Amino acid sequence: MKTTATLIALFCMALSMSTAHAENTLRVMSFNLRYGKANDGENHWDKRKPFVATVINDFSPDLMGTQETLDFQKDFVLEQTSGYQYFGRSRMNTPNEHCGIFYKSDRFVQLAGGHFWLSESPEVPESKSWDSSLPRMATWVLLQDKQGSDRPILFVNTHFDHRGKQARLESGRLLSERIGRLAKTANDPLIIVTGDFNCDAGSEPYQALVDNESLKDTYREVHVTERSDEGTFNSWVGKSEGARIDWIAVSKDATVKDAEVVRTSFDGHFPSDHYPITATIAQ
Image 1 (cartoon, rainbow, N blue to C red):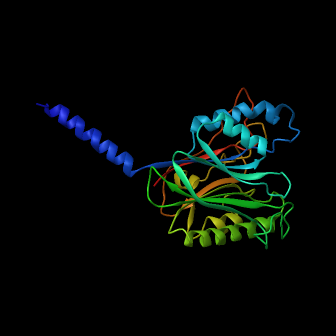
Image 2: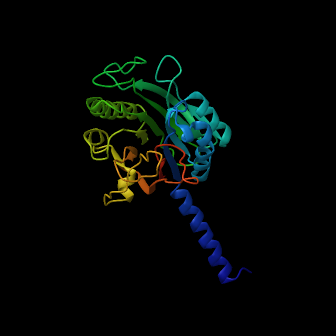
Image 3: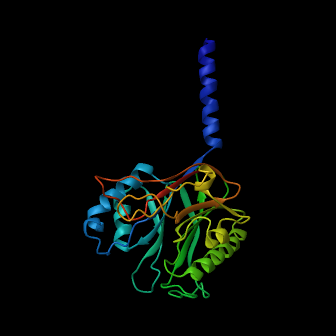
């Protein structure tokens, strides 16, 4: 006969398993890898790429959006990590940067995916508008989570222009409109947006994208009071002041369990000139 203590232990274990299932989580990362062909001296890709792999493996995101991703950087990440499927393309018709999406292939089934450009002609590759200095784009996938909720996931990754103030504002408006359009075709998906937005949280592009009826900022959900050390561009020297230009946004009804700026360094060297950022979301 089982003792009372044993029965209590079994009950607690069952309750724990039930709670874990009910609060199935998604680990999300956004990571500007820094253009791999840049003449960065001691911070060249070949010297820092092991740091990139270490940071990704340490967090082991289920979903990851990367910016400034060249083909050989994508290949390296796939080689040095385990179990990821990749979706992305060059923002140009010739090989160039991707807004890449990595997702765990044993967990997710890709239902659809695509790309659009942040311009007045979103379906035209290489198109640019307003005061944008370069063609900019967004990449998206619609996923089904085999381990979690039946609710589909719309995951979008982007990179706004670094010079064009008007382009960033119009990109925020366009992205918001496009996400709304995609969401209507996908039976109320959980929306997750990652990116390097090249403007601070609270700016007009941020308000156009995040401060609306659909999305919220994961970092601000967890860190309610704004601080001076939230910067995500480290300039290779580990600074934390400045603008928080990298964001992870999610559906308003999502529960954000955690959100961080990852400031891991390796003997004074950094994986990128941007800090990667993470969020953990309960479905």
